[in-house]
Length: 289
Image (cartoon, rainbow, N blue to C red; front, side, top):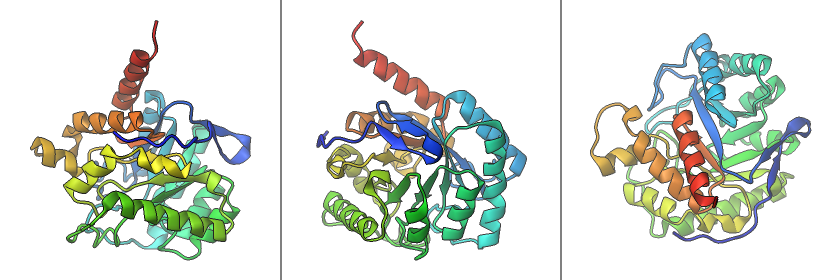
């Protein structure tokens, strides 16, 4: 496990004068308001089901809720703007009626991001790192909240078509350097940037393991780090457990605990209750009585 101790701010500013406390690992609960997610395809496609799921995640101890209306599983294709808006904006509006929990919009489309922010979203989670929609940088520059920039080869449709790296950690690091420079050039303060190395997005098994093993190296950028390893297929490649992705909880917890010890700040997960429990036990072990 390699860690580079470049200090990360203890607080991450949110719109409206609020903040995220980064003195402990934060749990980002996932709501896929889609019919075709790799993990929970169709469970939360219906508006009422998505809102009920949000209430459940809040009760389970989520610190952030991440809402996405477009699947990014390997081989998926982009959906129409109007459909993505229909799937996400009403859910954000409904959550805002019941809770002040920070909400993240998972999108690569600038109009979806802007409409989500107008509806009360506090974060923008862009798996393209502001590359797919040229107007996304303008939205991000005017926005007051955090922006998640993720590394990915190609697009969701092509990313798993024989991905290859000579130096995976170096390549991801250079990508982050380029994207942070882009932010500087476009008026996006890097103090608002969260970095995600993109587990499963254009990665082989060995690349995913290499990234988690060396997760701490990305702390050199001084930005909060996010891990999205929850229920990913690399876990099944290791364990040999077949069937639904919800059988991969044990492997998900192992990956996230390793990453936390290497400096990860935010865990994007499907299984919030189990993750909160694991983090609480880990932190209790670390604290002497």
